[in-house]
Image (cartoon, rainbow, N blue to C red; front, top):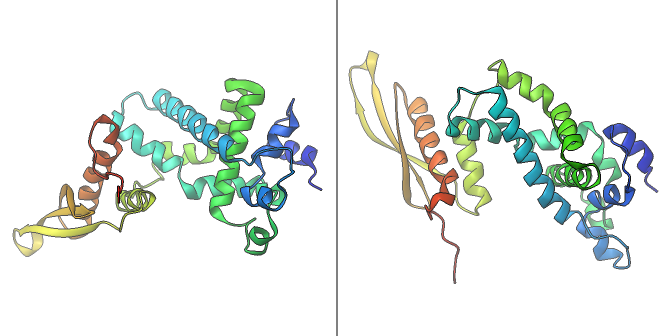
Length: 242
């Protein structure tokens, strides 16, 4: 049986309603094998935690970097609230140890799976928010993301737009972006490349650079920022109606 007191001690958060923490660490596979379990799985808490996490990180960046544009802030937030960072924080908190998993998920290394860890962390954040409110949740988030925030402020995090674009396309069930050279000009010692990036056969952005790598990164940034603004009416990836 899980020791929820030890888990709370590791988190540094002591719940008024400990069942919220238990729910946050209940994987759907556990309910498939024990339908009489009194709590739901962690998916709804994960949804809530994701929203709270993005709000808190966004607010923190807004305060820390008053000189940055909306696009730059969006990029920073994406670099912080990424799959790898969430899983690493969940691992450091030993959340995998406390997960309630079905036997099949357990046998398939479910406690170490990145998606399970990051989902568990977001669900825990949702549980803290419901149990103790936004101020305590903000303290928890900032304490866990503090080292990454410090690296960001010191310029030690490189914004890999090609990686961001690929992850974004994959999250929408699309193939990886492709890049095409539109133009190469200038002498060998001072070349200039113009590259266009395509996602789902749509040209989404162009970039210019002194080499192909630099131009591809610029094109990826352009496309990534366009996709991130889909809510403004740009329907790049309509759902399959077949």
